[in-house]
Image 1 (cartoon, rainbow, N blue to C red):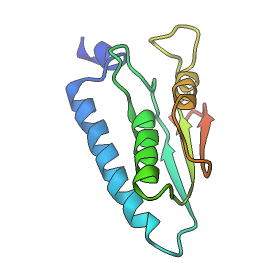
Image 2: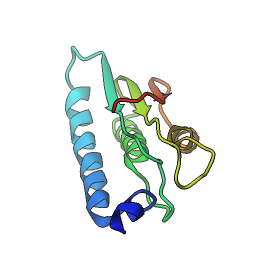
Image 3: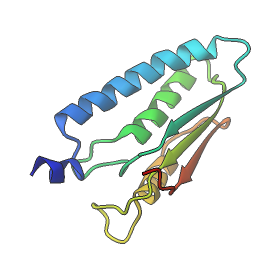
Image 4: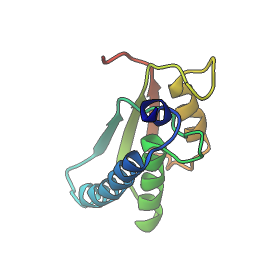
Length: 127
């Protein structure tokens, strides 16, 4: 039963994992932003999931974009150039007839992203 729920709801252990990811990414962006020879950062989320679950909680792609936005505004509207790759080849279990990555893109389009941060969306099978 929990396996089915995990596909459409952010269960407590996954919620903790996503929160930790956002916390770690924030710290890491602060470190990378202060290194003069780093010109561009690539961030990969190769199993991005639905983006937002039925219960309204957000997954790793939206946490990443929110963390990037917070970093940008906390650092005098500055962030290194970034490419953020989101990938998921699965069909949505929440929104029939839609791919998960289409949902991620739609939710990402609602996020304020700095001009030099380029989100990209893919539907590759890495299995």
